[in-house]
Image 1 (cartoon, rainbow, N blue to C red):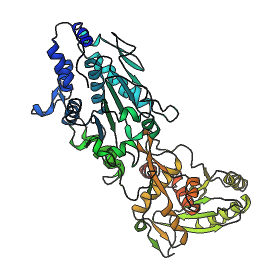
Image 2 (cartoon, rainbow, N blue to C red):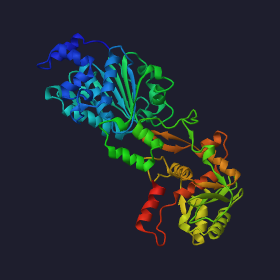
Image 3 (spheres, rainbow, N blue to C red):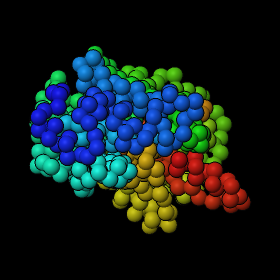
Image 4 (cartoon, rainbow, N blue to C red):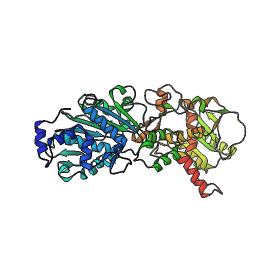
Length: 492
């Protein structure tokens, strides 16, 4: 970074009652600027952290890394993998306002994978801290919904906010000058096309880069900053458990909902990447490992079972029927050639044989399945006809109902669920998942992509998955608390 120019000295003299020496101190150290603007001091300098008065030790570590980077004593590329609630948006807002203030004609590109995160969180956080600056300093800035400009030279001295989308890959490109800062919030969810478009700026030795994110994905630019390219970055991994800013109730809620050994707990609380077992070059991880699939003899009856039906026509796929209860799953029938009528008749036969009520039957309604549902309707049977590509019940955690069903199936298995012996259960080993944009939501590899990669169509696995998409229904004699418990099991 260049030091203060003559034009910068002229700018500085427009701020009353301050010295050039103090300005240079702020330029060299963002901590000094934050203390001067908002009266905040590092947590380590105080016996007890007080929110609104102190900078947390994690925020301080990053700010000191920025100071070292601009002084040439450390990397100018900084990546932060963190849990929730550690003040990441606040930290980014401080650095945006600091960088604009101390570098004449500074240009900043800020982005995030969603408009909610960028505009409703980060950009409004900038507005909040701008309003809390002393009036004669805040008067130098002009905040709008997409830019923060320095009034003295608004065309060349600004921060810009653009959402990172594949169709608009220039989100962090097109910024030029002697003083450039790139800020990427929720960086793990930003498509690689965004980074590739701005590769020149991201690798420049004169550009300051800050990536902040929950570590949701096992591939991509943010992942590489901690792995293949870690020598080029100063990396931080911060846990919510160690932050004075995080409410213990948040940690307890994530632990209770997902479990302490879950990837959700690793990502949202510990600030760690999901488990890396057998990750492929697209970031997919097997949903099941060999030891997860416990095969047992066909013994005993099924208690309150569900029936999953994955219909197929006359193509290469098979129609498959799965019976499952709280402890076992069984492939009860499959056939290569089917018609909507024959599938409906077989479904009714199995329904009667296993005592499955119609509200516990779940059928894939895509394609031929829609005609099967109509045939069953003519028989007076109304089943749960679902399109696995539809929105899930838990939109925060899953991409679609297929991901939700498979993840519930995985949890059932890890809780002790077993499979009646059949060769087709090997299909479960071909099901893969990864975490994608919008907070690391779970996505199952699409069936067509599986087939392109040489796997057979997972018809039995899909029928098994469907049994976890039955809505919670009050059974005769069921208490309210039982229904609530059932809803939490099947709908998260």
